Image (tube, rainbow, N blue to C red; front, side, top):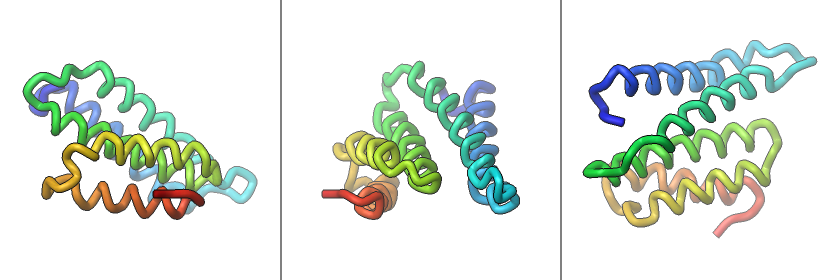
Length: 126
């Protein structure tokens, strides 16, 4: 999935919408449905994950790994926020696995560390 295509723009828009639901709209969720926006965000993140799964690695293997790792991280945080710690841990582990070969790259190190810390906060960890 090339960065310049209209398909990529749609992926980015879904991701931005998911982030807005998770960070802004979730604050407005009623007490009777405290995770409504988080679940909506998760559904969008799953759609983005499926789109990225269909992307071919080709010349952009590291970039694709980082994009997939970001999604795993966001899904991990989402599951942790909704008190689904085991699922959150699984996503955070996948994030670190995807980033392992690139963990010292400047564009990967911060996410790698955040996933490690998140994994520890989910109740288990390295």
